[in-house]
Image (tube, helix red, strand yellow):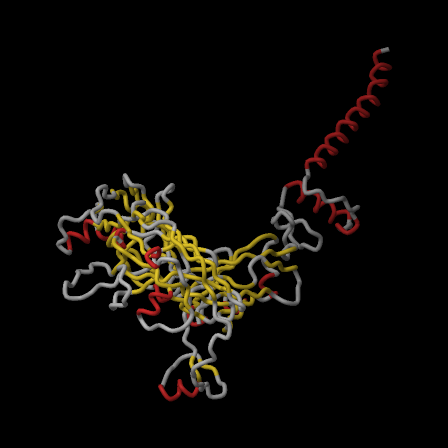
Length: 480
C-alpha cells in the first residue's frame, strides 16, 4: 500500500506472516486462495478497417499519423499500433513493439514521433485493441497473419506494402546540443516532493525534451555489466530552463548524482551530455560534457517524506471550554519527541500524545492560559524535522485585557500604592481625627492623579482670593 505521502507498506496475511516470521502489519481473513483458469473468449471481438499511413517516409522528429476505424459491441477503451522492423512478410524473430507516441491512443488514429534510434524500415502489422470489458485483442493485417499462421481477427488493405514505411535521417547529429549552468534547487528533497534541475540547453535543431540520467554518487562504470537507465517522471520547461522531477514513493529514497542529461532535439537525435566529473571519473573521451566544479554540486538525497498535519489545522478554542484541541500528525508516535506552542516547549502534563499516527490533544487548562488570537503548535521528530499546525484562541486569558496588557487596577486587587510624603501626612491626619479610610468618600478611579492636583491648586487659589477680599475693607478704613 502507498499512501498520499509516499509511504510504502507491505501488509501481509496473518497466517503467512507467522509462517515466515515477518514483523509487519497484518490482516486476518479467510484463506486467500484462488485459481487462474483460461477465461471465456471475447464474445464480441473488435472489427478493424480503413487502416492507412499518413506517409511512406518520415524523418526523425517529424509528425507521423496512423489512421484506422475500430468498432466493438462492448466499446473501445484503447487502440495502439503493433510495429516490426523490416518489410518482410515472415516473422523472423525481429522485435515487435509500439513506437514512441504523442497525443495518446484513440479509436480513429495515433500520432507517432520517431527518434534517431528508429532509423530504418518498419511495417505496421496489426493493432492492439482493448474493449470496454477489458478484453485485449491483437488484430493483424490479413496477409501477415496468413504468412505466420496467426488465427483470429484480422483486417485487410488493398496493398500490404501500403503499411510499410521508412524512418529517415542521419544517425549522426550534425548540430549537437550545448548544456551549461547545471544546478539543483535543493540538496535534500522529501518523498512526495519535487526537485528542479536548472540548465541552459541549446540546439540548432530545436530542443524537444531534456531528461536526467541519475545514478549512485561516485559510480564507476563496469564495462562487463549492462547498466539499466533509470526512468523518472519529469518535465522540461524550456522557457524557464529547468527540469522538474517527482519522487512519489519511499522506493525513491537514497542518494543520487546527475550523471548526464539526455537531450532529444526536434529532428529525433538524442544526445547524452555527461557531467564533467562523471566523464573524468569513468575515462570517457570524445563525449559532450557540461562543467561541474565538484561532483557534490549535482548530488542530492531523497529523504523520508515530511510529516504533515492531517487533522486539526486552523481550528479554534473558546476560553473556559470543556474540551481541548486535537491535532493529528502523519509521523509515527515512536518518532515524536516534543511539542512546542509558539516556539516554547509545552510541558507533558499540558497535553496527551497517542498513536494514530500521532494524535496530540492540548488540555483546556493549558489553552485557557494562552492569549487570545492565533498560535502555532509544532510537533518535533527524532530526525530533527518539525511539523506545524495553526489554531486560534477566542477570548482573553485570566488577568489579561483584550490588548494583551495586565489589568493592574481591576477591582479586587490588594496592591498598595507607593508611599509618598503627601500620603503619609493624610494618613496621620486621619488617625488624629479618629476617622478611617472607609469613612472617606469614594472617588472614581481613573489611573491618573493629575486631576486631583489641579483641583487642589484651584481650591487654594480660591481661598487666597477670598482672604484678600476680606482684608481689603479693613485696610481702607484704617487709612481714612
